[in-house]
Length: 237
Image 1 (tube, rainbow, N blue to C red):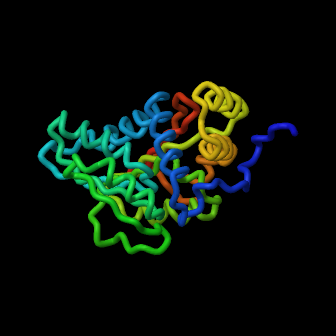
Image 2 (cartoon, rainbow, N blue to C red):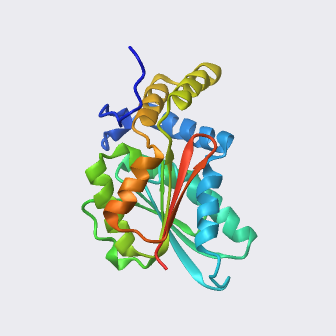
């Protein structure tokens, strides 16, 4: 069957099941974290955070909330960055899967400025938190277009400074290269299948431009980054 990347696929990933609680999930979370580190995906989010912090005094406490935090590897990287640069970070991870949150907490026991919440973004009232920056890394592609618009509107109304989204480019080349990664690193079946579906659920620039226009965001940037990612920064200031 020919590979078609003209439109986002409706295929579902195993990890879309928020009740999942097994070793396959933990393996997939670990694999995703390793691939992100290997291909430099985490740096895309870090650079976005740096962009939003340009005019913020170093003695100011910054609350960063990571929606769809997974194993928490992004927050741990930010914690290390904050410590190294004398920045006061309050880091909060959100995920709807209880097993994912348990795994993230287990991996983050040495980081005093990281906490986690098991909550559904569509149902939980986040207004009690004073959120400066929101992160959405490899999360938006799990949702349909209308859900993405709802999520982004909710988060935009919560943050003071802005949003950093980091997600997959939908392309045939990215798909074929990930097939090579599956073979080289002998990825588990769940990681492999979900990874390929993730790419087909990813985005083209025109998708992100349309979301931006539909929501009326004025200050934003959309940049292609290696490896086959888009960095989408929405600045609220």
